Image 1 (cartoon, rainbow, N blue to C red):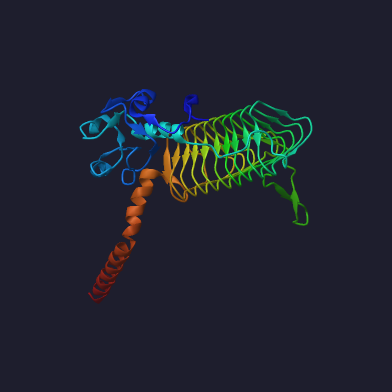
Image 2 (cartoon, one colour; image 1 turned 60 degrees about the vertical axis):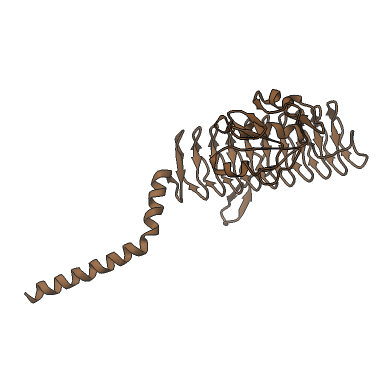
Length: 354
């Protein structure tokens, strides 16, 4: 599953890498790159990268055989791959050296496979995995050991399901989806109603979860099935570890959800939304396209497209920063207020004496 089908091999020359990235090469095209590293830790045979002036002092000290740099650092005395987005280029190169988790070819004899399943070519299923009945697995998809895949599940091509992940009945998974260990897709939504005695009666959750192409779901995430219809994670969204997504939530395309985010039921996120760590959203609100929400924020209302908000409750980010400045001065304000009250009391006493 490397980028553009590039073949994993032990080394790549700097000339090959420059061609692959569309970068300008400064130096020899024959240097063999066998791995990647940070500016501080990379050694001979390794490639590193530099994005800005903050780390420029490390470049001259680096033992890396070559560096990926932006045009503003083309003057460095080093073998360079020069391109406009070094961090993106480094990510692309990392695919060339990345090896997927090892999994034997075929289906392990200890795996359980239900009836009436359809598997594409190159499917691999690890030890003690469970695949229910009426499932479809696309070509080159890997189901690692101890995974649970329920009945009537459809998983597309080139997916990677890491050990001990769970995909429950009826869920639909697109192509090139990555689901990390401990994630649960399709658990019941949190739906209850009180009867006349105040007891909580469960509302059956009979919908499904749909995960579109190129989504990545982090370790120990939980994505609840819908009460009716579907909980929907759209194409290209990336979800960090320990995120909770409730029933009937819709997450748009190319969103980023950072660790410990919690999204309540029936909330809808637009495209390219970023939720920083520990953000909480109430249910039944809409978050517009390209909204960014700061860490630890609590959002009780809808947010219009393009806005940046922070705080509890969330307010425009610039207002939140001003509020933080004032909060730091609260002890000073308190002392000023105490002095003003004392002066007013003195003036009142003087007035009465007159």
